[in-house]
Image (spheres, one colour):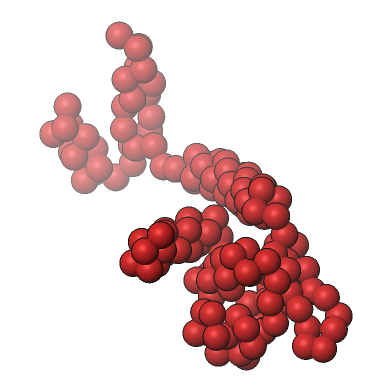
Length: 147
């Protein structure tokens, strides 16, 4: 595979990892680990160009997410979990986020419905109407003009 094609493939994979919720730095570090199998922070810095302090932050976050594991050694060695497990973990985390968003949406919709001011006659079905009290002369005139 040519270097240009490899870079384009890596960029696409990083983009996909970001869509699954990883920040760019974490996505680059994870991909490098997935390619290398295992590496130290220094090796990752050389491979990705990400400065070591930033690499350590990303490694810690990836470890907390359960996407990599750390070997206690000198230097510390990091290993990427199997991609199948990693992707399943990221998708599961996204599903949890979606469930939270759906709950928040339902709550928001209920709150809006409770506070919504109906100030017009609503046509329900064919010739069915609901009558609503309209207060204020300007509102009444406005509704008459709309009718």
